[in-house]
Image (cartoon, rainbow, N blue to C red):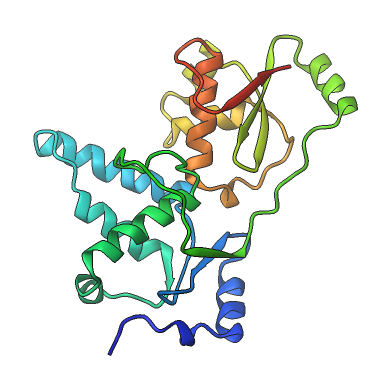
Length: 228
């Protein structure tokens, strides 16, 4: 019996999964009969810790298989796959599934393993993020008064943020935080004023952090950014 049955994804099942994952983006790989969510910040942190610990203990080797298993086990919502089930998935399908999960988390160019990503043509969106509109000219002028130093508009896919530069104070405050990257992003995103960060995919936060380093003098920009 096949692990995957596209016919098993009924409207009733989709509604049940939506209710169990409020505020989360959900996607269906219709051909395979898989429903999944993107990598969130919490899972990304676990992956990074696992990778860093293994890198230190095992002479620089990264546990690719263990990380792929972690991503699939946490992100695939249907069907529920046991460790033995995952062993029976064709290796190419397993790799492709990992890649589409990464892309939906807005690791747009490369995945966690620095492998190039092609555009996902397998999935359809079941629940999308509630994106906000770009800032109005009036609100932008008010923001410039609140933040007289340079501020920047950053686009990551459908997401738009306005950030200020990272300061030494920010670095000091975030130094011993559990997730210093996220804390730095939270401190320096000045618009939107309120964001449901739990619903923002991990790759978006990483991309904003890259741009934060860029405008703060550390590195070159990788996505679309505009000084305001």
